[in-house]
Length: 367
Figure 1 (cartoon, rainbow, N blue to C red):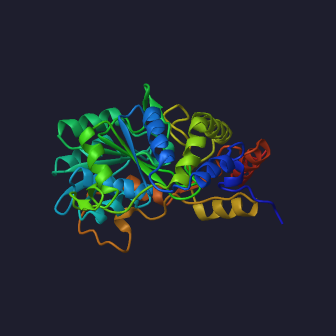
Figure 2: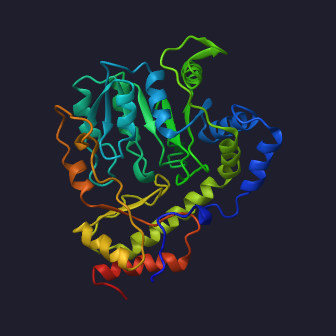
Figure 3: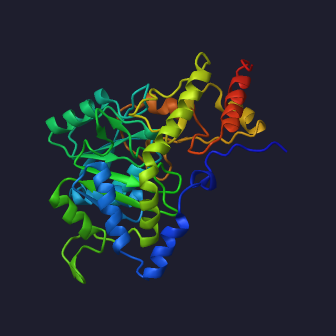
């Protein structure tokens, strides 16, 4: 049997992290929700993000939903977002009762296309969610300027882009609210679900904190409609505190693997990631290939794990019938061609070379 190169391995990625010590701190303290570890992580992550505050939450999808509720986006409101990012933003939009207005993506980066956004903004939009897909920063300078000109609040979905930067500004530093996931496979991952919002608005900070805990202004006093129970627990916060100082080094490892792939695959009949610079933290290494099923079969035979991020655009998902939407030709074409290869911290040279050999071999260019 051919040994497999995994798409992601928690045991490999977590090597060198003192998870036992982090968990022991919480166990000995016997305080498990909204305690000192959560407070410390919120302060440390806000500082890393150069944000006024961080509000930790149960998961990244809750972060998107609570961000929209913080901005008072609800029934009758229209939210612009992309349709190629796994339905997470769409889930939040539907959860608050708003209407998703999908925007096509740039053919190179697969992130929101500014020209397409401008067209959608002209139809009347109440908020924009921009997703930094696969760890690639979207064209935030243009998008932020467009949102500001339209007087529309901008939410950044940074679930796949912790630490990505452009001109010294991190992902999450361009909009009024940024949302993060700490799912175990993320660039900054917990050992379970987790999420957060960052913001530099005192008003949004206070409202989001109320919304994450039933709408309480103080215990048992509900003053904010739409609240829920969405709290990061102390165990996850302790783990994230141990990992945060390693994030930039891990991102550099991811980026270095992506650079090796890009160099090896140059000249092949594939479309590669648009950047391997600091604006890309290689959460996922996604390329576009012809005849994807045959390519995946070759990788499987060679023991290389793959996945598709994502096979069905949001506007074509069966659970929601969308009456009308702007054309999304780039989104739809990409969904039939994208494929993800292993790319994570700790992936060894032998595994990287196996991936390279398998891909080149599939296209008949093996050494």
